[in-house]
Image (cartoon, rainbow, N blue to C red; front, top):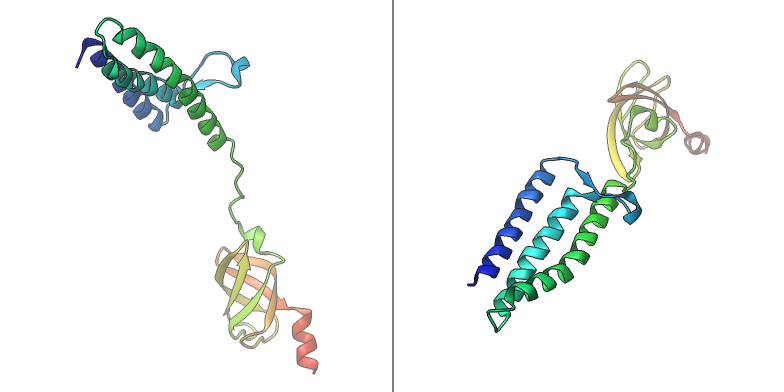
Length: 177
């Protein structure tokens, strides 16, 4: 292993340090925003790692001893620029990713479901609701008795684990038949 290879490996090793600092949550931005966004610590870690390790590979594969450092530097930069850019873009994309809001008790109102445990006036039962693809089982109460299997509509939230329900119009049409 030549001196140039060792130097490139040390530079690549610093990328691991940059990556650890980035993973610990440090927010460092360098450069100017005219270059498509800020250079972040993960982008710097990607650039440094690609430069160091890519340069070490190129320097080690260089047959002559006189040009291994220069060839390693050119190869390192050629690899580091796209890797650093890609790392910066991926981090920005992850940070700007839109996510659905967390379900709250307000999301329960207006949802429909099915009675699992019959509801009697003044007594609690259990209902199953499907909200946003998530099946939830909640305690429920109703102003009128509802049998198991009845379709219900949530009209209020009593607590985070209990809802006020009433039968849906389909239940009334089935009951009258």
